[in-house]
Image (tube, rainbow, N blue to C red; front, top):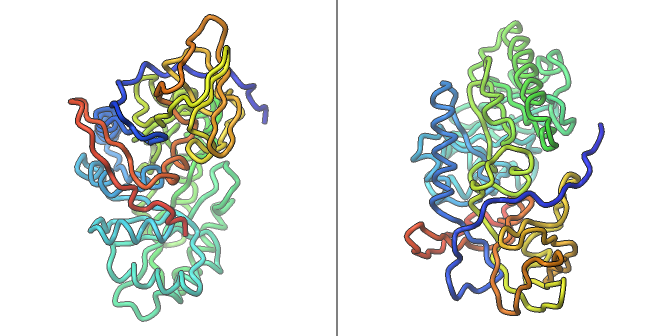
Length: 375
């Protein structure tokens, strides 16, 4: 695979004004942009007759999850038992844990408790994992539903062939689990120009696996794809639901990939200039505010719409070092600037709350309820 060379920082559109007096660094969410992103995808998928089951790993927020459900989402996708527990405890109980959970020890006990209280489906991609899931819920008043994970090209987890899908499904059924679906994640779409081909990968792999399961006697009601870059392109064929996550908040790489318009990212890290020299500035947002996530096709650790041409070229824990172009902005110590992060998902997990900024200027604070619930 040829890796795209870094390109100059994409230019997200100018940001709404940040409120005065922010205690930085802070993760700011523009509520009007967030709601527009949520309703835009929901309307698009509604028109296609495909359900939306958004992944909460991006925002980890009960409030934002409720916004997505209010807009028409079928249910929620989670990546960990911890995320599922947080959502279920808030009454949001239609959950798909789209991960090959190894249910042993404490995780088996937690799974059983969650299964007894939530409408839960779990991902599975191996015979041993199916056996562990079945043991964890043995004796429950209702069976556990599972979906077979299919590798559509990311080569991370998932069965490699339709025959392997049947093998795992048969073992799961013999163990007492209800196999009623297949799912995949087209994560290999996170490179420029890849979304169209990856969407075809997702649809093709899912349809082949679903067909093999049906030929083996299984009833397949769930055919689930999930990646923000392919979120509408893979809503085709037999696909019944999309599990996109990043689409709600957006980030710099989604703009660079063409998956979002420049004015759609809804979250920025607000940061204060703590030092300034000619051609350089230092921000109080370092690796512990932005993370060191740096896709191969981007230059710098975030975009600075207010400072065209500026590059965040180095991060320490609490320092963000910015190279400024000649003739460009010359910030002053004390200035506050918004940074569009490269990858918003890990950035959210670094904070306990969002600063939610309404289009009327109202400032609120929303909890990141599932922060740190990574297991």
